Length: 206
Image (cartoon, rainbow, N blue to C red; front, side, top):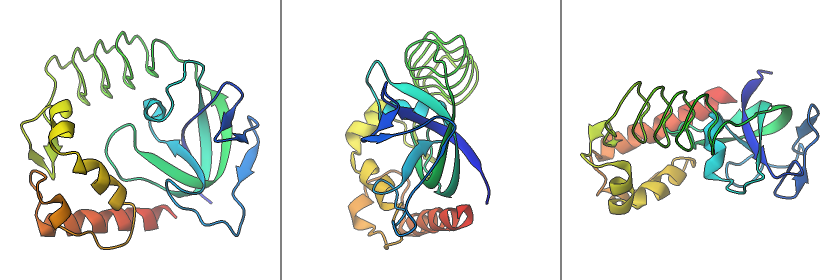
């Protein structure tokens, strides 16, 4: 069985949703319990800063974990979470700065190093939401591989249905085009292709 690595947050007592973890010990979902993203299983993020999308308490603890038997999210962004049947807390991550998991960051919620903005996953950025290196201008959001011309905050406000689509992609049920037809760059063909790639990616991760 392939062991993957990721990051998980707990409260100060090393608990998540009432379940208490023992560092270094494997924990496993019951054999008869279905593994389902956002519903059942042990959830984690592949990027260390992703956990801050789900935990905001000041005494939150972040752990590097090893996981097996996973349904891995193909969603972009550090906050994408996956679910697994088996998990082990390997070591606690010492966080420098506010909600940062990189080094020498002076902004917030950064995964990369040396950033002075917020929500960056690259290095040396002095802006927000950049996955590049040494950027000073916040990038506009791409949607279905086309530039929307909108900053992230603008995009989220104008197209709130983006969130529902990100959840719908976790299911194998066919996704109706009409509900998301306002999204920039979308076509029925692109939506079907995107959904198929998500399904294929989950099958490969099993």
